[in-house]
Image (cartoon, rainbow, N blue to C red):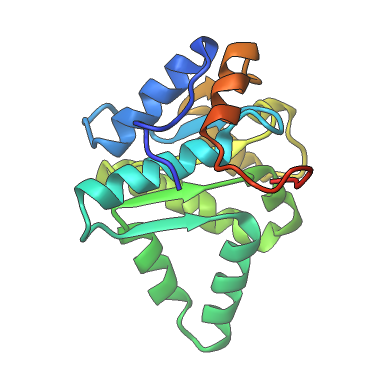
Amino acid sequence: MTDFETFVLDPANRPAAAAARAVADASGVPFAPLVIVGGPGTGKTELLQAIAARVRNHHPAATLEVLDPDSLAERYRSALLVARGERFRAELFGADLVLLDDLERLARHRDCQGLVADLLDTRRTAGREVVVAVSAPIDQLSGLDARLVRRLTEGTAVALSLPGPAARLAILRRRPPGPVGALP
């Protein structure tokens, strides 16, 4: 897991990192939600991990929900099966911070899209952030409910691009050494 102190940053990605740090530091800057957009390999998941690590380090008692659409759907459906759907929703809505990775995969879970739209509404009204990572701009994603798309586009989108040569070299230098020929 990384924190912003060890996060390797390409200059083009500084605005995204600054917004992520503001969320992690609870600076009060409303993003509602913060939408991190970037293709594979741009560091979206690592940036979410940096946010989570910083919050955990500075606020150990904070309640974090770090989810992807598959784990969200599994937990929600399991809660519904034992008549605890409302309790699950309340826990999710009441968390100090919610981080959702690979949100484009929510298209496979249509039954959970209303839950996420409600989550965005409730947390925005309460002044609590949600950070969402997606592989493409929201208007280019398919299979998402119109209400959810509207809530996402009301937030603040920041872009991540693939790291340049200097950032890639810095990433390689920070990797722990492994056996010759071994893939990380």
